[in-house]
Length: 456
Image 1 (spheres, rainbow, N blue to C red):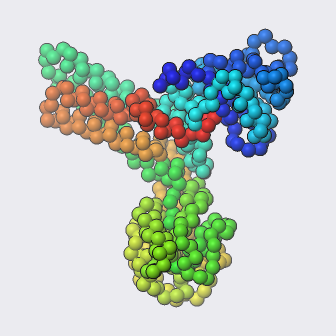
Image 2 (cartoon, rainbow, N blue to C red):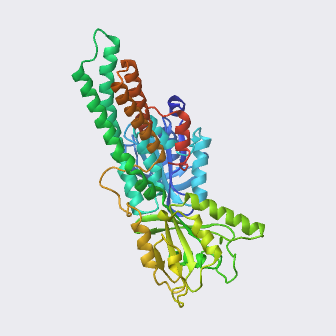
Image 3 (cartoon, rainbow, N blue to C red):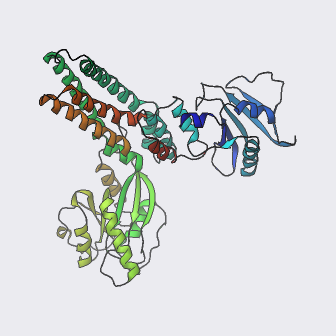
């Protein structure tokens, strides 16, 4: 894979599509500077472009006609994002001129970069390990300050340093065992074996807090899935609009107005929230409504939190209890809507759920509801001082590594041969290496970097 990427020089816009003050076109590869020299005319005479210095000038097309007034910079290897020779052309930010410049370079023999290919080259050239490369896309896609802070820390190598340290110590232990396998004149001494076990236990115990941080880290990275559930016409869509502070869902007095899920995002106390409004759950013969009810029921299973909305101005109905029976009580809140009306509902019939009275109409109680949502999750919208993991791939790798270390300890207890001990340590090392990219299969790399946009 590495050689295939390094043979070609690639080009792509590095800025988002659309109008803007400037647009940036990025080139990476051995022909980047030569391609720039063919079409760029600096405003002052330049014998050799200094690395990491901006030059003002004009970009000409293949016929010598002016394309744009630009700034250009050459960043020579290895002091560049990709570890290769990089050129950036800063032009005016119109989509037409950006496309013309990219086409000019492609016609000159460059290839349009694939999504994430610049970061992939940085990984393949040793500028970033895989966990830091993944942090780049997390930073780009972060939806809150906390998510951004978490990504920046991972990009800075907080997780990588822990993984490399674990691997280094486990490699030392493995080398001792393999030395005994190669020269089996005598058994591993009891003190040496005890020291190996102590080292492995220490490594395993350092993995545990990383695994424990996943739930909080995942919420910060992916957001909290909060589902609004209830029978028709209790004010679910009104509650969604009130929480968002704008009208995003259709609200009428006609039951069943919402027939499919409506999803919107916002932030509560640093927590990114994906708010999901669902069709009213009730018995219905309407096939379209029935499908909406089925989808709402399925969403309950994957929600981090369910807001069960009831109408406080009415007695509870069988449909209210049908919705009540769908939710897991330890991840649900009872939202008693229409607190601006005389209270009629007997809340005690919804035992096991903390009740919060609100008025989607006048906003009463909404701040309290938001505080309750945030307080239910230990992350609290803040990034822990200790290193956190937020990626499911990292969690799975750490779980496999811990399992292998536990097998090692069990193998020692049962007096297994050194070959089995070495196998357990190799499996633990392989799993840790998947996090940093040292042992990650190509198909996983392809999937990770395909998440990136073109130009990054």
